[in-house]
Length: 269
Image 1: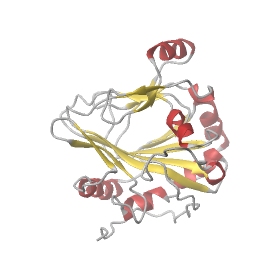
Image 2 (image 1 turned 90 degrees about the horizontal axis):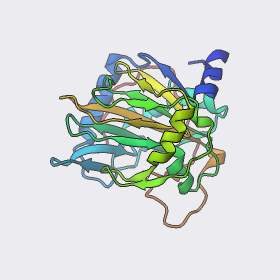
Image 3 (image 1 turned 90 degrees about the vertical axis):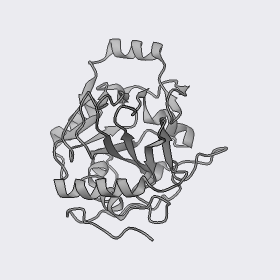
C-alpha cells in the first residue's frame, strides 16, 4: 500500500494513521485461530492475569524459533500492509521488529493500560532515538466498552516524558504519572478513541501518549501489535537487559512479502 503526501503529513502532525478494514475476514479468522493455539502454550513469553490466569499478552509471535512462533503472524509482520506501512512513515527500508505481541483483554477481567509512551520503556532497552512505530491490527472490534485505545494527538512531538514504574496491572512497565498527564492534556487536543471493526489497523509513533481502559464487556477483545525499529537504531548494550522475547536482538532487516492475503499455515512442531 502506498501512502500519499497528505497521509504522511497527517502522520507527522498527529502521530498516527487509521485504516478501516485493512485485513479481510478470512485473514482475521486465521489470526484468531493462531491466538487460541498460542494461548495454550506454557512459556515465559506469555503474561497472565486474573483469578483464572487468563493470558494478557502473547509475545514474540513473529520469530520462527520462539516458543510462541506463528507462521501466520510472521506473514502479518512482513506484509506490505504492516512492514510496508512502517517503512514509509519511518522513511527507512531497513526495519526489524523490536517485539511483536498480542494484547488480550479478557471479558470482564481485562485490565487497563495506563497513559504511556512506548519509548519510555524502549529507551531503557538501549535504543537511542525514537525512530520507531507500532502497527496495531484489530483482531476483534474495538469499542470504548471493551477497552479500546485512546491517543492524545500530537504528543509524539514531545520529548520522552519522565516516567514512573507502574505496578497496577499484571504487566508492569514505565508509564506517565497523573500530574504529568494533567499538564499534557491541558495543552493538547482531546484524546481520540481508536475504534473499528476487526481487520482495521492503526500505525502510531513510539512517543505518542496512549492508554486503554478496562474491558467491561462480556466478550474478549484481542489486538496484534508489531513494533518496528530501524536497524540503524538497534539497542546498544545495557546492564540486565530485558528478555529476548520483549527486546529482540535479531536485527536482520525484515524482507517485504508479496501483497497477498495471509494464508493458513501448519503450526510448528
